[in-house]
Image (cartoon, rainbow, N blue to C red; front, side):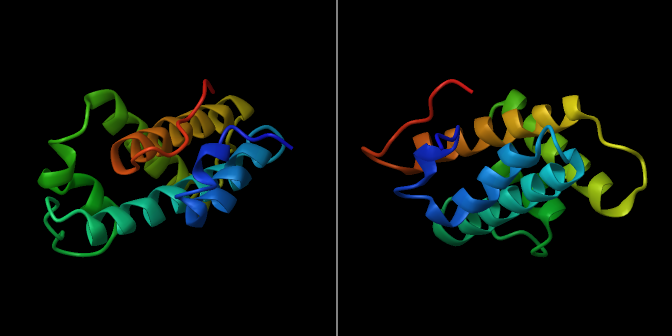
Length: 134
């Protein structure tokens, strides 16, 4: 099966399974999609803070601390930052709240993960596959 996240296969294989789960569950179980979206984001940010020496290690290793670390936050575009915050917020809602998550939100979080991982692949991979249109 072709996935929107096939571009992760070569260099970002450790994110691929979770990203594909986001895609797989977006319409049939958006809560699960939101959970895996947050997991994909958190694993990617841990990788970034471990490998990009321009990023300052946040005061704690929590997802929110990484997202709001100025050396990260101030060097990405506002639209991408909004996607990251959306993934974080919806993932937290999926894990901690009983409020239903709609299929529209499932698809939005899948698109946000695609944009974020696409940015990651473009910025941190040389000569590797690039993401296609979502």
